[in-house]
Each structure stands twice: as C-alpha cells, then as structure tokens.
Length: 289
Image: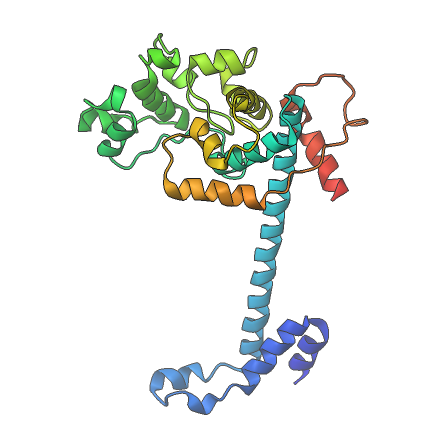
C-alpha cells in the first residue's frame, strides 16, 4: 500500500487512474488455465511499475513530437523568410510552402531519392535514358561502397546525356541531380536559379530554399491570382499522383504562414550567406517560442 500511496501522490492524475483501473480489474474473469495462473502471479508492485512505465513512454513520445513540430516550424520560418527575400508575395508563399513541405518531407530532405525497388520502375521513371537498361546494369547501380558512390552511379546513369536538362558532359548527371526543397534537376536550372552556388551546397535548407524560391517565383509569375494548388503542382511536379496532389491541397488549406523573422540584431554583416545564419535563426526562433 505504501507503493500505491507514493504513486498517487507523485504521479499525474492519469497515472493514478491507470493504477486504480489495474487494481479494480476483475481477475476472476480470466480463464483458469495454467498460463493465466502464471500471469496472475504478477504482484501489485509489478502492475504499478508497468503502468508508470507506460506513462513515461507516452511522455517521451509526446516530447519527441513536440520537438519535431518545433523543428518543422523553424524550418518553415526560415524557408518563408528566404522566399520573402526573393520577392514572393504572401499568396505565393502559401502556395510555395504547400509544395516544398510535400516535396522535401517537411523541409528535412534535400536530395533526390536514388533507390528504386526494381529495374522496371527505373525504366518507367527515366524512360529517355534507362529504357534499354539491363538487369545487370541496374544491379550495378547500387554496388558503390559509400552513399555518394551509389548516388554518382545512379544519377550519372539516368541524367547524363540529357540535353533537355543542359547535361552534356560526363558527370553532369550527379553534379546537377535533384537538390533543394523542390529538388530542381539539370544544369539549366542550376545555372539560372543557383548562380554562384556550389551545386552540392544546394542540398540544404538555406541555399536550397533560395534556389527553389527563385524557380517558384519565375514559374508562378504568369499564373492568375486565383490559381489553384493543382496549377502550382503542375510546374513543380507535373506527374505526381492523385494522392500527392490531395496532400498538397490539404497542406495549403491548413497552412499558417510564419511571421517575418526579426533580423535587426541577428547579424553582424549586412549580407551573410544563408547557410551561415541558419543556426542563429533557429536559436532566435527557439528563444521566441
């Protein structure tokens, strides 16, 4: 009984309810088989420990969820601020966020995926360069020792010799693979929207967001003010499926655009690089709650 008293005094009301529920459960309702007789040997102390452990696990999950939500908000605030710097208006920003949040898994993934489960999927996705790929060639794509090795093999195989993307030299496939929140692909896009940036640095929240915002602004400029989410999806990922399109509409309908970041005392330099200021912005947003 001392154990019960301590739990009821120190733990939350929810824990107390769980303990009382355990103690008042009708044990006589259990079958009288050997297995259940063994299970009934658990002491009240064991049951209380299990209840408290369950609450602790639930609390850890809640903390992780809160941390994830905070990170998502900070990333969204940073991407929004960069979009404003690039001249997107508030309506365009809402559409922009509904696209990049889906494309980059809440602004956490900035490299195009290279793993395809079968040769058939590669051939269908990259029909212009992989339609004649053999099973042996497909298997060889994933034999590199490091992640970078495997990416180089894959993207050079599917994006090299793509004049429509501006890729005309050996190695252009990997060099200009899909990166950033929208995962723009090809030398043409990099030269137009990522001028002065190192291609591999575009796989980041900072420079990647700047490149993506420039692309989005350029493509959206001729759309009417009442353009739909699907209208914007058409130039971001034209061939995406119905489920993905619906998810983008849902994100748009629930979207709350972050307020502008107060940078008055944040930087020492007038124009610091995007990647240099990310940690400072995150710290400021965290402090501001």
